[in-house]
Amino acid sequence: MEARHVQRLESAVDGIAAAVLAVAAGYCGLVTGLAPVAAAATAVLILLAGWKVLGAVAAGSPTFLLAAFDPAPLPAAEPAEELILTDSDRLDHSQVADELVLDDVLARLEDFSRVVRLFDRSAMPTPGELKSRIDRHLDAAAPVPAPPDASQALHDALSELRRTLR
Image (tube, rainbow, N blue to C red; front, side, top):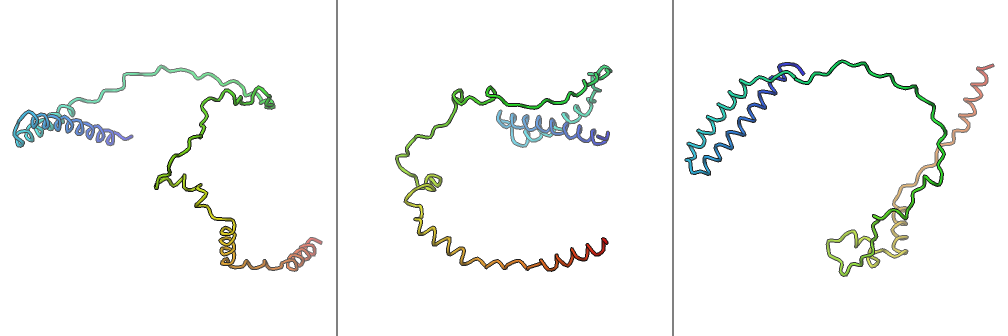
């Protein structure tokens, strides 16, 4: 970051910190029975004083310096052997104890339970209704035209290619 951006950022953080302190002081003044105008004046004075004090405190340089060190060389990469899975690599399903078992029976369906009503047998269409829906959908679809026969053009192109290669 450039120095001017850092300085602007530090100044903005100082202003925010001073504003938080000023709001807290103004609120405390109101709660303790100070007149609203006096509480606002107190908040403004604390805002200005806090901003000045925080602006006077300069940011110090980092105190944690790292010592110079030489990076260690990486070991040579070894080629991976073939990975063979054995029976010991299989997951033992008897050890899985946190499985979810859905065996609760709902006493009554609520009006807003859409997921449960999705699988309600009384709301499911009959096979005849499904077939009529599918037939209506297929009848409404436009027929797909057959692709043009390009075998003669392909034959001519291959003949031309053979003739140019000779």
